[in-house]
Image 1 (tube, rainbow, N blue to C red):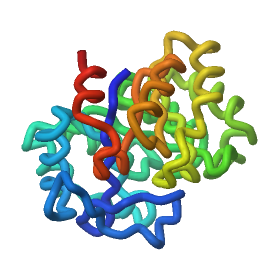
Image 2 (cartoon, rainbow, N blue to C red):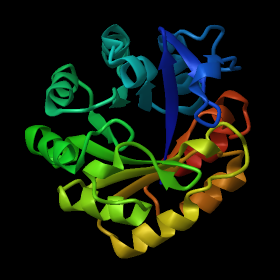
Image 3 (tube, helix red, strand yellow):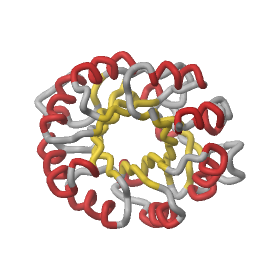
Image 4 (cartoon, rainbow, N blue to C red):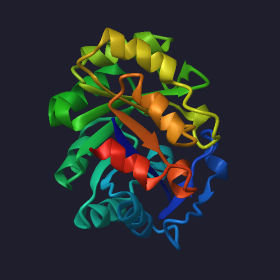
Length: 244
């Protein structure tokens, strides 16, 4: 299982996400970096933990349809591999991201208009470049569910798998940044058992090394982490153990 650092971007700064309440997100304070500038924070993560694969949530793109292209370019030029959620709604932006050097694009339930949009994104850039994000809020799927003909997480997941995606993030925003443990592990166990060939990633609420160990026992392939890295609650030793 890989540990994947999360960087939430808003107005050119890295912000600390808490429970999906984006109106209250503030620039991050971290022992890893003296500033909240994206490149400084990313380098601090890499220097401390040896991690160079990042999950980027571009809140300007998600909320205002205004991607922070320059930040992506700077991080890629500095050697980082990026998984980027830039509010995908159609294939054009997915192609733009891939052409700029983004390793994988996040096609998130929150912003996709319907299941067909996910199918078209997969068709245009290839399944290996697309990660579907099953976005939840207190266990309930987010976004335009009319376009999915589904109301529960398992049904949405099945529709997504039918489009050809091979990687899925399961993320409950209500658990992000609140330090109460990862709320999606039970669902991930179900999904891993039903679809053993899929690459599953989850996160949100990770507190410490013990939570990392619990997550690794569910059969997931990746764990998204933010606050616990910036607060020093997860040690470089634990991260190094996951890299071996």
